[in-house]
Length: 513
Image 1 (cartoon, rainbow, N blue to C red):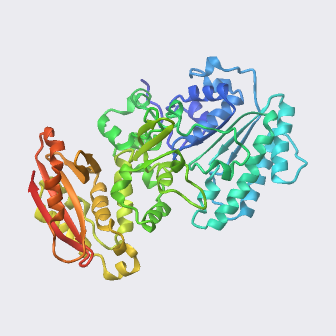
Image 2 (image 1 turned 60 degrees about the vertical axis):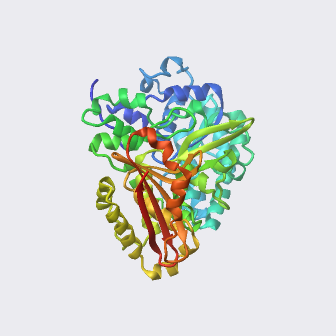
Image 3 (image 1 turned 180 degrees about the vertical axis):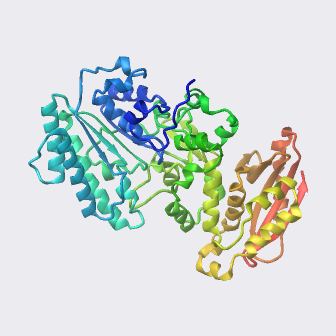
């Protein structure tokens, strides 16, 4: 195959098609949406190709046939129809008040009036938006197409100030409420963003919006599939370990085929080095602070369960932990259980990039910034199974936390604090961990797979300064090791006891199973 340019950061369909870039054909999804429905909503994490897909829809409905030659939808589309496209995007800049939001909306509506050659008489935002849709339909003889990108960004940018966030929500509802009333003049409408706010809170009245966020048929509408990577980008794969690419960047699931984050893949193919490219483009400060304030037990993040209602528990007044982690892309759907009409989703980290980088961020929030974590020496100690050095490392880590930091943070009231720090420290190294692993005798706190051994870990919190031996006793009594004997690797039991009195590791027992 001929090598082409990598479309890093390019969200314009025309530029990709005319500029000699690689393109993963998503037009089959566009055609299916256009021919089977009218109003759609899609939530996907940031930098996942939403804007490019929206631009693809814009060019398709505008009838720009040359751009689609050789693509799946070309021979299926009626190129004789050219619809006026009204595209609204809140991706650029940061809006910090309702006044700024209204001003931005008016700018967008003014721009469309000029580009479509239309003048609106109404001065209010709903009046002008509705008039724009009607007049565009009348002038061009085809019903209008409405595309909204980053529909939620004005709210997300202000979540730390609920009053402003609520004002933004009302301003956006004022805009989006127009869509339903213009049904006779709209051919197609597609709204996309990162979050999935409760429908009634922001799309009030638009009850015919088809949410395809969790739909197996559209799971790969954004992102790259295994086949995409192996075929479209085949000329770029030489010298890169295919299994490593999969472990690092694949694993995002919305019930259907799993996909890679496209931003990660493109940067990897350019830089030829495995790094947390996607994670590094946006520090999840708000999310980390929220998890800390809710005293979230970090090892359980990889084993959360949620139903449809919980995944949609996202609004200014209350943001569900599961909903926030899932919608922002730090967790994904790893399994589904159905019983009658009920559905339950298992959530977990999608890949090594997210698990490692996210836990690095959590570790920095769980311990003061001046405390050394020494990732490379720690990794070497685990590979060497140097139990004495490992104990010394964690004792030094916890001893480095100043007493003033404990007084300023209510972590002593949080039983999972020390275990969360321990877990995040290991997860940040990219080690193969399974928290809360289920056996027929109960749940294992943490299971670590090393190349040369399996380590089964049990945590206990004690109040005094003398170890009780309860952690190791439970490991022995429950027979947790039995589940892994067929693996063939040596199995080690590690019982760790954290003291709330000394604020350190007081119990550390190790033995072969």
